Length: 208
Image (tube, rainbow, N blue to C red; front, side):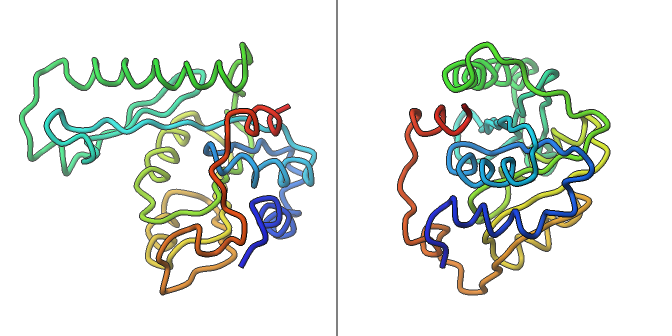
């Protein structure tokens, strides 16, 4: 049980001390991941940025992920080929939906970070942080999109995730740090005493 996201971040930072000498960049998955990542970035003396991802759903079943778009200096669209092979869509659907979701990413980035441009991760050690992972589908898309931006070393750091999700995500990164891997998972919030819904003001304050 973690007291709150900051407590989880401090515990993760202790496991990531070896990254300090490689001048890492810390990328948080908002909103909850920002509070965890802030502690890690401070401990490592690293810059903190956001890694935002938006699902591209099917027109008639938006909750089913056809793919996702991941932000950055050059946003990346990641397609779930298994789903794409089973459906027929208008030729321009993915392009149009990607554009719509990217506009929402840019709106949120501007609200939280103003005009600050995404950090260039090429050739750098990059630590991706969230407050926990359940199924890992969104995280997998984010990591695959980020990998195309050519980081030298990619690390995923989370406080808690079920063991099968951790096993699936191992192949997407160079290192994976997960403090707790309970078999009876339930929900991320079960492992925090304070797991309140973070506000935009909190996110902006943590990003400085």
